[in-house]
Length: 134
Image (cartoon, rainbow, N blue to C red):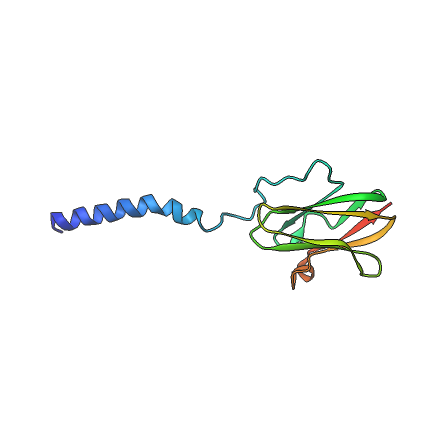
């Protein structure tokens, strides 16, 4: 190998070593839930979305005004809707992406509710939970 070719290979190797961490960082990282996302202080129920499931299969709350916090912990877009016993949506539906926090402010009387991600296929994959309000 000539001296000129060796220098060129060395420069290309240095450039690749310098740019590799930047390229890997742009891939979006992992979905381990390590994003620093937290619920607001007034949240009465906190639901985390990670890897096509919620962090719990059942939640509880006391009847009355609720602030349901929804935390996006993975790279997929997720939504959250609250359904009553008749499968009628109660309050607004919210959506989150990684690092987002959204809230649903709703007054819930005692009863059984369902929390669901409405993105097609997500509920069937496990993004569905019960909410018992006493």
